[in-house]
Image (cartoon, rainbow, N blue to C red; front, side, top):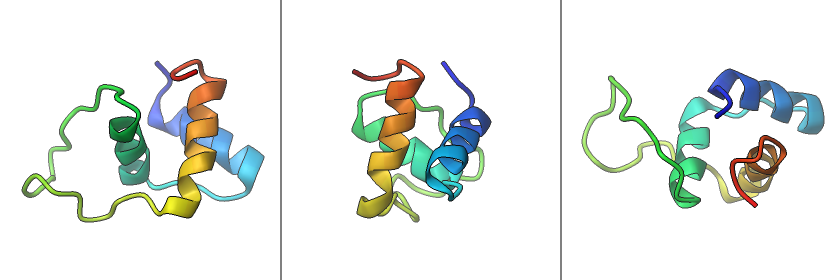
Amino acid sequence: MPTYKEIETWVKDNYGWTPKTCWIAHCKELNGLPVNRAHNRQGEERIVPCPENKRSAIEAAFRHFGMID
């Protein structure tokens, strides 16, 4: 499993912007991938969910790293 930093770098190199780690975690949840609970998380709901228009790039990184089909 790639690190969040590797996913951030891949998205930046291929799409020109850097995703927030909370966006990566949200996309992992949406795709059924395991996510650890952040030490600074407050409550159960996401404060900063991934914007709809950013998900495809993050999911492309998941496909690149073989995390999803």
